[in-house]
Length: 320
Ligand SMILES: Nc1ncnc2c1ncn2[C@@H]1O[C@H](COP(=O)(O)OP(=O)(O)OP(=O)(O)O)[C@@H](O)[C@H]1O
Image 1 (tube, rainbow, N blue to C red):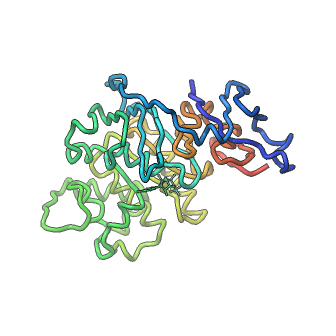
Image 2: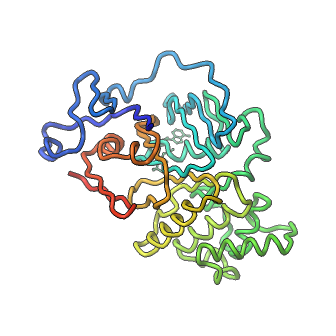
Image 3: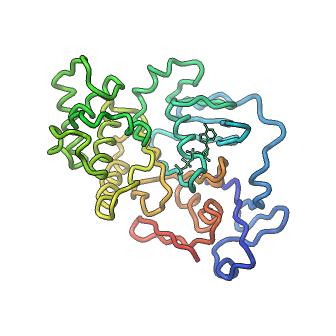
């Protein structure tokens, strides 16, 4: 069952497009439930619960990620507010939300890069605050813009991938054996960029860099793979190629659990099984893809009346 927790979309009656044609519910001033979806006005979305939880259930030992009551506060604002989220080994999640919704912050917590202000975070059975994150991080494959920015432009592509074995960027004096080099090559081949192995990273196109970053994220044979906007900046051909390769990865039962962050439903690869929709640091809906991702929840998430189509396992959205 999908958890559809919050629907902050309030149709603007003055906008003709939002009336009648929108696949979103009408909203009472206080609270309403339409077709099983909890709906609250924007004022409620912005509110913060007065008494935050102080105790949390024990983490589920079978969960790859188990977040309870996760709140991240900066400068008095909650970037994430009371997030509960569980990811299991065989699940492939997409995290959707508009700019500033808190997606990257959520991924940073889930990848053991950021401790929450409040809440309990268990990653691969280890609880943040009780584990050495430097031992935990190699078990998590992460591809993100902030990590990519740290890759030296004069590093060869082959080294960009193999250095993940030591969780470093920039090859120094570490020694890599033949198995590392073989694995690096085979991952580059999996993403169609094996021929780029001798090239300097700084000479690659954006699309080529993205594929190299994902190959790097898989280098340590991680138990969970987290990709923050892997298709950002790609042209149509590059996006379609990447979506296809991610679909192959997501559909392979031998692949690790996957969490993919995006703004665009068009970038959801077939094989994704679950969705978490985030708005203003709060969960709008979370659960199996078909239940959590609907025109209604998407409209609520982006604060816009949207039509959502699904053809051959691919999604498309447009404003009504
Ligand atoms: N250190 C900080 N202090 C204050 N606000 C911050 C800080 N870091 C992030 N924020 C704010 O938190 C919000 C969530 O940021 P985050 O990067 O997680 O969003 P996002 O959903 O990934 O956005 P985008 O899609 O634009 O990448 C943003 O409004 C951002 O400006």
